[in-house]
Length: 443
Image (cartoon, rainbow, N blue to C red; front, top):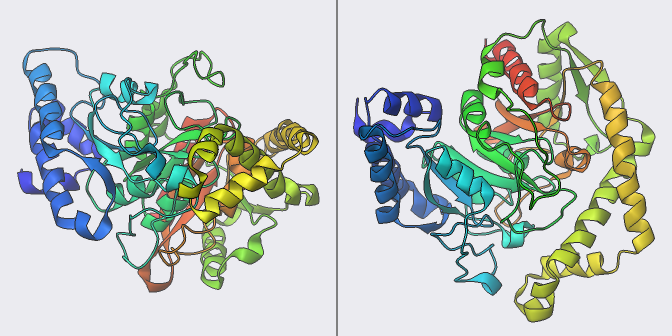
């Protein structure tokens, strides 16, 4: 096996090769580091990267295996971690000058779970400012003049550019699905509360969700399975039985899935090429897909989400506002000003809509295995923006799982994602439905 090309392996392929003794973790990490040296000047996906530390972790993983110690499902795999997620051995600076040099004392539970599963924490990937809208330095690997999306910019770009096979991000509005679409990788926002969020920069307790980036559905299943869990410091997680993502994904569905195609009330924001691509997709699926109309009342959901998100942002970033608002971007200051002006009654009304929205979606999922909708209005726009998250907003508000499938191509050959949305706590079934759909399109 050509060790210089190991960075091209999927996570699943690399894990099998390491387990079989065909390659070492050190060889894999070294190949990824070589790839980073080649493409990082153009992509700029990393906020912190210490080559020596990455290789030391890899050697320790190889020693574990050589000495017969138990090896987890991610053993020896290099993984990028968004720079709002605490790592005890690396800085976590949250994309703001107010936190430069901040090094936590403890790993976030999600990082601890990665290490327990055998992963090598490669480094910290670039986030937008405080995981909001102001872009960081990262550029789209397909076109450096375009955005990789946000806020998990570096995580999506690092996977797309072949720097690491896997990465972790977060989503409050569209911060996983959007960059996955723009960069042409698989992105997964699990059900709200599935993965603990303690030790992660808090933007909105109601909305914040840990998300994943990979190059295949198998890789997503491999990564998510050891991360699901309960943490008493995150009150929105709960004790649950192990979710067999890999086994469910490997099994054929008991019957062909049914899909609902949802344009949503913001369909007019899509580009013509997006509308054409989705019309062709629906036609290809034929009788397995039915277009469904949203209730008119749901058009207010985007306002509900913004009300909740900005009010909670203002609360959670109050210390930054008081200590150094002049060092925040104008866009973030405006968001925080709006959030500080939200009235208690409006906030409570918006919160009260969420259970109603979830109940209505539950009825839809009695008819459909998954919903199909665009991930973004079109391909990645210029780098001065992170793009429009509007096609992710409703699903983030409802807390349902969402998945970006890099199946379509837009103008200029740029990636255009298909967003698949599933029923709450039926995440593994969503991945299985995605595999079936992918087979219909690719074949």
